[in-house]
Image (cartoon, rainbow, N blue to C red; front, side):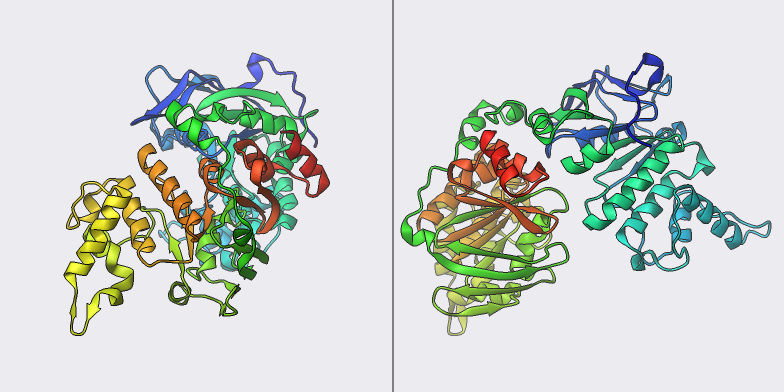
Length: 538
């Protein structure tokens, strides 16, 4: 079955939202969204990170209650807000990126998790009935795999099939709208077409699909129409029949200068973050000081790259591209293989966080991440923690030397309040992130690997972090900035590697580094000269 007919009347509308808004403290996540989904279609929902897609899904799922005046009409009647059970009863079904499939359990057990097991009169589980039910659900999607083995031994696409089959289980009512959130993020490319077949069969059985994805090749192949959210606002719905990747990119990005998608950040920030990084690398910085070979992890296939002294290299990519694991893989914080050759002739093979730190490579995590800091310690104790040996004098620790260094960092980075003995846990998110930077800068590293460095920080702290990175880059410290925020990459980086499916799919440098170009490179399907031409014209 191909694309559905798109002659849509009001009676064809399954779901419509009117003036749908959701405001969190200091942020409007959704702003008067008016979306319509037709019966029997596969509609894509597109938008950058922070566009409001997840909030919209959570409103429909009953997790978030929208602002007063918001309306959602589903299958001819208003949808009650704030009740996951009511959303499910009405026929809305959700398969999230985290599938909720337990690898140690079989397909039979996983499918039974949501609604309980069928039982015999004596109260025992009727395994024969459960097995038959599971086979029937899978048969509807034309699936055939061993339903008794642990799900962890199945193909990734079969685990996705378990989640979809569970969502389509009609024991608790007919599934009318199936919402798939980034369903291919964890799938190998070869299995994507299998998933598409499952989606089409679900549509043929009468279920409407809302397909949430960043991947334009998938959207163009599977969807009939696409709706776009930008900064919480609804930008429209377009038929995909005659659209090209460039057309969709322009829908997602909006104004070509990249400023339109920053309304929530405020005018003071947009001028800074949209400018290309003004630093100019000298010849010494362009010469590689480190060569990284054979980086492989669970999501990264085999990446080689070089890094100059003082260079700021960005790593960008959509969900599932390998970007999320890149920083941790570089220092061996997750299982990985890698060889690093230094300009002085030394080599580091398969680093661990400890051996990497000895070589001057440190991982800077966002303040909310596990292991980023010791939350029960003070500001001073966190800053001096990685290099206690620096302050050891025979049989005691030089408290005076510790305090002198800590006060220097407090003043230099503007940590507030200016109290070395302040409990770290009592600081704001931005000041916590400043402490983390001070801690690793205090080790005098030659490479700082930053993992989403401005996540959860305020505008002022963001600018301080930008200035720190630029200043230390100019002083010879190299940086690798792995970020889901294009503002970070535009403001900081001399060069950016774009990841897709665990490999480098594009590279941007110099004046090519703009918000639009980064997003376009992440979304662009084709590689080589066609992609290059597309990026040059944006």
